[in-house]
Structure formats: C-alpha cells, structure tokens
Length: 307
Ligand code: GYE
Image 1 (cartoon, helix red, strand yellow):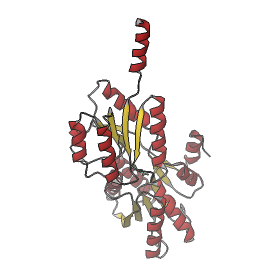
Image 2 (cartoon, rainbow, N blue to C red):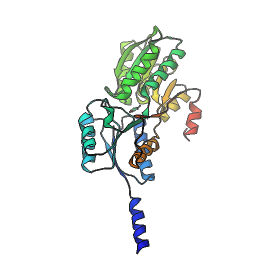
Image 3 (cartoon, rainbow, N blue to C red):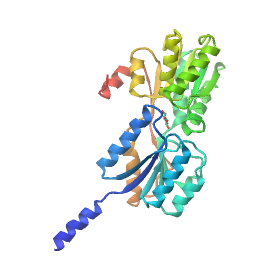
Image 4 (cartoon, rainbow, N blue to C red):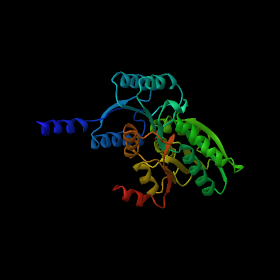
C-alpha cells in the first residue's frame, strides 16, 4: 500500500504546471514559428499550456490574462502587442500572486509588476542594421523605413537603434517612414506608395524594414514596378525568416538581423526555475541577435536543414 501510495505521489508531483501564454497573433513568418516552438517545448516538458492568440489586439490580451488569473494558472507569459496599457491587469495578477513573465516584446509598466522579460535587444537589432547600411552605402544614403506595429516595443526600439547609428553620418537620411504593421501586405502597400511618391525610388538608396515580412512585401512591390531588389536599392530588415535567407542567397535582398524564434526553452527555463524557488533573475534575460548577409545566407539555410 505504501509503495502504491508513493507511486501515486510521484505521478502527482510530475503533474503538469499550468501556464497561460498570451501571444500577439500571427502577423508574419517569425511569430507562428515562435508560437510553434512555445507549444512544442511545453509538450516536451509536460506543461499544460493555455495558449491564447490575441490577433493583434491588446484588448484580447487583457481578456486572456484575466481569464488566466480566474483559472488560477501557475504562471502567465505575455508577448505584449504594444507597450502601453498593462498596469491594471499586471496589478491584478500580482494581487492574485500569479507571477508574470514577458516574452519577446516589452511593456512600459513598473518592472516590479513582472518577474523578468526574456527577449532579444531590439535596439541592438536597429543598430546592427544601421551599422551595416552605413558601411554598405559608404555613409551616404536616402533611406525609406517600414515601421512595425505602432506603439510596439520592436517598432519603437528598432527605429531608435537604427537612428542612433545613422545620426553619426550626416549624409544618411530617413526620407520616408510609415508603419506596415509587421505584415507582408502592409509592407507592400506602404512600399507601393513610396515608390509612387519617389518616381520609382529615384534617389532612394535603401529600404530599412522593421521585419522581414514587410521587406518581402516591398520586394514584391519593387518587382512589380520593374526594379531589381537587392541591386537597385539596398534592403536591410530584421528576423531572419527562411524566405529572407532564400532571397539573400538569390541576391534579391542584402541583410537581415536574425531574431531567434526557438526561445521556448529559454523562457520555460526561467519560469520553471522561478516556480521552484529561484527569485534572483535580472529584469531582462537577453537572447543574442546577429546579422546575416548574402555571404552566409546559403550556409544559414543549410544549418537549418532548409533549401
Ligand atoms: O520581429 C516581427 C513580429 O515582436 C520582435 O514581432 C517581435 C516582432 C518580430 O511580428 O516579425
């Protein structure tokens, strides 16, 4: 009987942690890859993951988080659509003693309202893109910028980081800038209007897109306008999604800063350690980023088992 009871206890203690995850949506290629990794990694760890897709709307995220609180989950992970508007719900989670972890995007709330944020440095990504462009253009370039979702941490920081480098070069100027909402369709639409307004990108030396999907849209727009992407205009963006590596390898884009999508392990490592009693986390668990170009794109595809 004791043995049986012990087994029961063992089975009981192995029972899953319940974690709620409020995800942004599926605006590009990077996001669904990240969602898949979060689900796969949860399954591997026997985590009962309550996954909620906000379809790009913060109000859906607030509802999801409140429902996680009502369900008394063990922990909540949020990838916040935008930085503002989080104070009230984070305070509610705190009052319910449910720890909150930020994944990927940031909030502008008091950091005491969450345990830590696990993510890449978006400002660094912007600086890497800017540094690459400064060198590729020899410090002289009229740039058009495709911004990410207005008010989102990556749009704010990728702009800021890029400008902090290009500001060092008097002849690098951002001549047009608009949000394409991180989507291929949004990037295409904004690029089309910029191509029109500049008479076929006359005098434009580069497109800086806050993510690859908007750049994929810009590439379509350029092709339709009879331009040669990656040749007539330099193209630099962020994410390193498979299609971007393919375009780099084909010489139709020039550079992309990789944002790793297989970060479920990094995130759950932190959450699980916290729930086991570790509390001394830094407020930011940094995931590294690096820049890729035509020179290494084929090798990067091969590394991922892709063609
Ligand atoms: O770069 C973009 C996505 O939040 C940093 O969101 C992330 C961004 C990513 O939709 O493609």
